Image 1 (cartoon, helix red, strand yellow):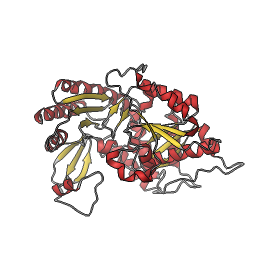
Image 2: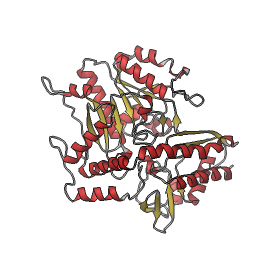
Image 3: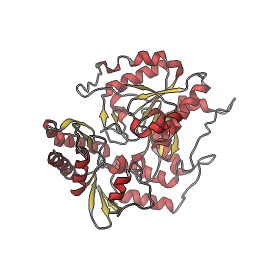
Image 4: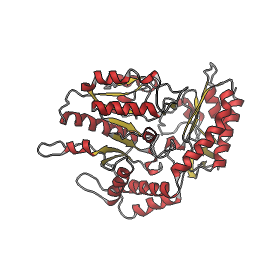
Length: 428
């Protein structure tokens, strides 16, 4: 435990929390994080949803070490290197069809920025020069760079940035709490086609978090809505950008969340679990019918955008080993089965007086508590009580959620769910 403030500026952390003291993590192993004192915590949120295979996986550590002995870094501007070439091919091969090109970045927001710029430039060089606006869902989060904030504006986080933003048009969050109808017969989509059609000549792209809005409190919606949205975008020739940074790589019980809807997005943003959370690496995977418009013949349409660490060889080696582990250990299928177990474990909370709703998708279990006027609020009390029991969580408002490593043992998952249930009851 750190005693009071240091020189470190902690992201998304109030000064009062820093002054109270924060756990100081010195190592990780499997689903656990350890303090110098030896105190052990279950990393129940996969270190900001990234460490999909837990900590210190020996194969990924070995892949990093081996690549570090060969080539540490080489830019991708007018150069290539084998790990980036192989990883791009593997990522393209995970898409519905492999006719894709992969633009690497460092973190999720950087991948979103690249996707937005690709959409804007694509619109210009295909003659749609008035297409300069984006459409996203209300309460969506796509990262903290200015472009990403423009399509993922959250009042509580970003209100002081508003004057600097190119804000997106925002669609209402689909309300699928009752139906979750895969054919999506609900009314929440009713006004979307007409809105998109009315503004089609101004829309450079539509961007969505597929099936679950993470930072909004794990708000979930059915695949039918996403399918109808994709079909409408295709009819209107509006590029659809799917932000799989949090939901991709098995989290929803499929390799990518969009697969539940059976769609073929124009761009897919990936990050976080791409390297199992071990090194910064992200990418935007782009259909070739968009990519091919960036030729410099006869006119120069080169995409003049990049990052120093785009496709770093060591990070790419970690990402390649991550994919091998996913395949050999059937990680996505394991996550789907674990998700069913988690949903069953949390189901009994639905009848608790203090619980508003329990919602699950793949290996995400979210418990939304009813509002209360106490200080600290109930969700924060639950967080602190769980930390005393050895579980690290970060509530989203009144939502307590579990997003553990996908390879977590079933027994450990059941124990975590039981701890959540008992702690919520104790905090009533």
